Image 1 (tube, one colour):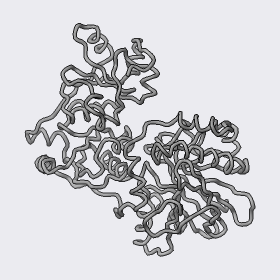
Image 2 (cartoon, rainbow, N blue to C red; image 1 turned 180 degrees about the horizontal axis):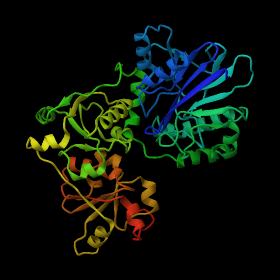
Image 3 (cartoon, rainbow, N blue to C red; image 1 turned 135 degrees about the vertical axis):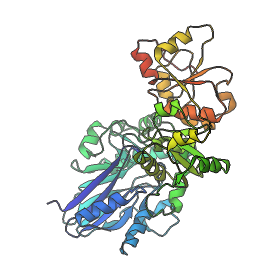
Image 4 (cartoon, helix red, strand yellow; image 1 turned 180 degrees about the vertical axis):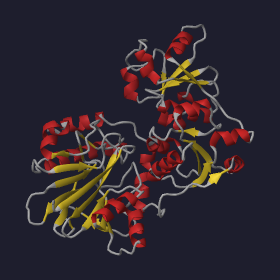
Length: 474
């Protein structure tokens, strides 16, 4: 049996991984970059007879709420008193913690974790090298957002003025710190495919130093200027909640004591709560939302994923009422929301839209146009306007002729001059449909009434053989 135990927990919605690392001999374990719903770590530790004694962070996360405090609370409730939170000394964390700096070691018995300062993705970033006590070479690297399979982490988390200096720091981290590690070292990054912190689309969640040196393009950019140029060229859209979550994690998010259970609310109770300032979040699939939904509800299908979009468009202090059909759908929504800092729940609409309509309250409907119908309409004397809500690089690669462009996540933050006119029919589309649903709900909240969606997005248009054009229109 291996002396060093590792279990990886992959969250495809966030695009991240977290880890338990432990000594088989001592049974002592650490959890690296835990999420806020910590039951999975506790269960895994119990099944393996492990004692979790550390909650470790590689950096102040911008894309999710750290679970180190929730984990500590759960362990304390179970009678454990040996748990410590250990984070980068450079992060300025405001809660009791063990500050970590270059060269520090965390002991788990015969397994040790050595701290490496690896700035670039963030200023305070650290990574962990895992050793067996009787061996001189490391076995594993927990690289957080510094080294990612096939790429790196983004360097713009500290504002535009720090983006280039952090890219320079990242060059030094990769080329002067990590490049010299032995070939066999297994690389376990926190960020991966699906994360907006990522600069690669690789679906792999682990690698080796040998493979990264051979295949990761950022190891081949051995001149700092070229490295920085490429690092800045691959930055994706910046979700607005990335600006606020590091501060939440620096202060320490409030402890929930478990995943919240939603309170069932009647239609009348929901209507009253809305009058008092609560917000509705409809997490049903796109077809259900378009068929009928409550006016002014945010429409973000839970498997869009919800956690990738809610933080962009919903106010951080929102009191939320969830609209979802199945208990599993609502629970998944709660899980995704608490991971990104939304934990002020009023409840859920019991019996859904059926109860709402039965109580005499209004619903909205949006027509879902097929590609053929849209093409015919565009050829008529009074065609609709087209709004493409995909990312900028998608729009620039191919678009419908005459389409306006505004990314879905930025609709609540757009100026009136950036938004389409409200006096014409407006057809909204993305690649396949989920982002269009988000966008339509946001446009409705801004007073748009004559809205349509292109069913299955631009991919349906292209599959029908209809023309697209290349290059930026706006």
